[in-house]
Amino acid sequence: MSDDRPTLTRHEVAHLANLARLAVTEAELDLFAGQLDVILGAVARIGDVAAADIPPTSHAVPLTNVLRPDEVRPSLPRDEVLAAAPSVEDYRFRVPRILGEEE
Amino acid sequence: MSQTNLHELSAAATATAVAAGQVSAVEVAQAHLDRISQTDDQVRAFLHIDADGALAAAKAVDDRKAAGDRLGPLAGVPLAMKDVVVTRGLPTTAGSKILQGWRPPYDATVTRKIREAGMVMLGKTNMDEFAMGSSTENSAYHPTHNPWDLSRVPGGSSGGSSAAVAAFQAPLSIGTDTGGSIRQPAAVTGLVGHKPTYGSVSRRGLIAFSSSLDQAGPFGRTVQDTALLFDAIHGHDPQDSTSIPNTRFEATAAAVEGARAELAGLRVGVVRELTGASGGYQAGVLDSFFKAVEILRGLGAEIVEVGCPSFDYALAAYYLIAPSECSSNLARFDSVRYGLRVGDDGERSLEEVMSLTREQGFGAEVKRRIMIGTYALSSGYYDAYYGQAQKVRTLIARDFDNAFAQADVLISPTSPFVAFGIGERVADPMAMYVNDLCTLPASLAGTPAISVPCGLSDELGPRLPVGLQIMAPALADERCFRVGAAFEAAYNAANGTVLSNIPALGA
Image 1: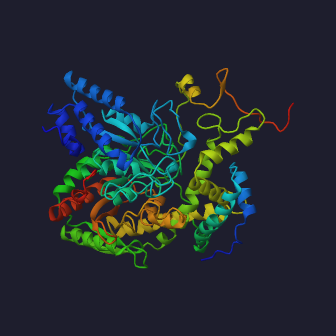
Image 2: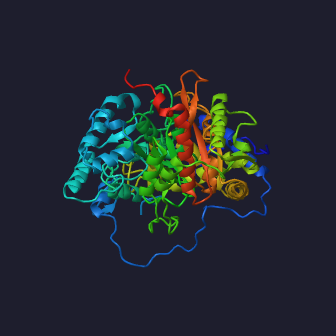
Image 3: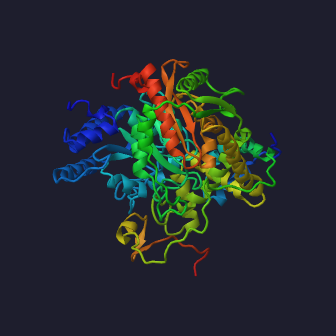
């Protein structure tokens, strides 16, 4: 087991949660810090494998350059798509403000 | 034909009876809806039951029959659909609160094929949230109970689909398998479950967990029924760029032929790393497994032992690759286009609303995996974690290549454990992850594997089913069905079916 990582801190979990856009609670920080550290410790043994010259694999049957004809096709039905959105205005998705301050 | 036991018929027998006019598809659908009404308060396999849609689909089959149309091999057969597969106009949640109330504007390719086959979709089945789990306890809605013992889990993540078929609520169901989520629930409920070659069943309309691993596949009570469903759902789909062109399997023919054949000349490899030599496997599981090896030997198969040393790293590779891909895939749940939105008070920014929505909409396991994936993909760690895991995947695939040079199929127990108690493993994520130990290598290599019932273990008290995993090379799915059917026929001839030992519900 080659787990020479420093123990995952509460502060680091808060940073990860922020990167992942999760507004975790204080109680969750305590819970997750311990659990994530155990999981990372268990998967760290991946580093024991000598694989420097090994190419990566992502598909059992490698496929390259999957293309399709550039033809117009019907889109998803607009009304059904918008009906499933949390907020809609003038046939568009309505979003909260995306800028840091008022223009 | 007796109307009282329609829910106990196999899919093959049901389709034959409907095609022959011995029973109507509506009667079959109603019998299964009745069975669900009688049993689902105990089993809780379903998140949504679509009685009207089922009866309408069944009536359409009866109308076609009345008009003289030739019906397909599964027309009029009921099916339960895992709730990770999108269904137009029908609630689809993937077991998550973040999608509560969502009605998709399109059908998955698998859904379309099911409808075109004249199958009758009864409803959507419970699952671990976004398919992350091995017990269905990570569903945001409720746990599902194993029909063999209601205090135990039905496996996962496709636990609603396994429980529904084991409880005779449907003869067939669709699951998805990312690291074992069809095979392990099939094993612990006494069913057959097939994880197809990656790319042989379209992923269009499967809500993505880990895109390089996710694959939909069938559950059934017999190898032949499972093959019939696989034949209905596989095939190239131009709308999935990872779909393999020109795939056409004859799994049903392979199953029918296998059930009649011996296995003389077949080389069966027992995988040393997946048979508990270093401990951790239940004795009752190993006992059933080694009896299964003798059944295969009795059918004329040549048994060889094969070594796959890199399989020891499959768990580590999987729990880096799957979280990494999920952290990327689940970024789409951003509170904008579908699903939940929390805290949109006109003041908060999109980023704040997004973070509040995801915090409230995702459960603990989903959050853990997203954060592990975020860590593994972050600058400075990518090569050591995700990159290294993708290389280990190559080593696992090479182990398979070497093993398949010595054997035509490889076998192992499907899971080291029989069904465990609800609540037993929820506090310890690693204790949950080891359920997938035997199923992960084929997931990482993208190769096909099937779980077939191979015995009962009473090690923990009640008699609980054990599964035999049969693995084949990429695109050799038919071999899984042929060998699986031969084993099933020999096992049943000697012992009766495993499922005949299931206690009656509602006693």
